[in-house]
Length: 427
Image (cartoon, rainbow, N blue to C red):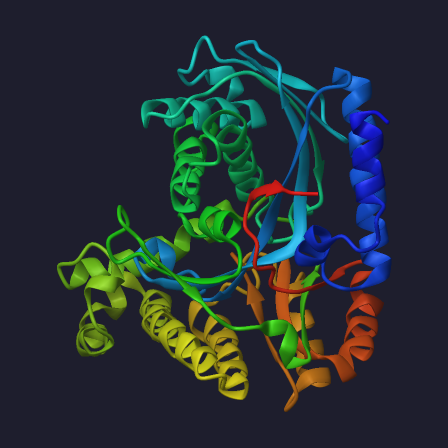
């Protein structure tokens, strides 16, 4: 029996502990994943031939607490989810990385040059080159390999497909050339470096860290160069609630100014207190100077500063509630965060297009179905895109039916917090 035939036999084994750890106990989902992995193996062999391969998985992530707090050195609560990017990889004994992904053109990265290339900006190749460059700078071995990737983290879903891709690349290089010695936080920092300096997009570290580490984590960015990352031990599956992310289908294309206004407003208030960011001041200080600075910075900036201070503390309270197994208090804090985003942070709909309020409507529908039973809030950047809800299993069908009636079949993603971060899948 060939190596690939042996692997296919293992993949199709319904009692696969590796799959259950990643995808849960639902037999239909486990069957879907078996087909997915088998198809990916066949795709790899068609593209690159029969080789000694390894499987890898990298989860998407969901932001649970701390909405727009990271860019002002605040705290966040985030979790890895069961939607993932999966890859098959094998060394090719060259200096070239060759990657094929369904739905995307195949690309190659020659490692003989590790400097940023302007024509690669905003491409996956830029991320791969940047990750390898930084890994080499920090003393790790890099080399050429072949990989096929199946992207199971939907783009635009607010689940951070780009960060998942970045730490997936780091995990492959770690395993193939460094015996898995790249630490998850190191992998995350390197992914962020590549996105900032090679891809050309400024970003925080929350997304990459959640994808790399897995499980539920809280991050404190008070010293952004040395963020404090802590695992939160809590089993969401045992609560009888599902985590549902709903894609409201809004257009992100013209929202750059809206997103940029959030840190700008917050930092403008901090500057009036002689600080760089809001983490360096208190709510009392903000309220004390509010009457004097209203005309200069605008009332919205002050409201956003109030949101920051509230949500930054709420992360601490959420973690404490989960650690004492007080899920009801946690849900109430999620709702409070959502109200704060709506009323104070004002990142629910763009001010230049009040007719399109997909996020607002999704929150209203969630309120109608879940009031007194669950929790709901905007998810991620806001203005368009996704909302998050914690839905009791008894209301799950009603909730999904209600939201998909408006946003279309498949717009709701039923998820759970997965404990495993980016790394090799030992089948």
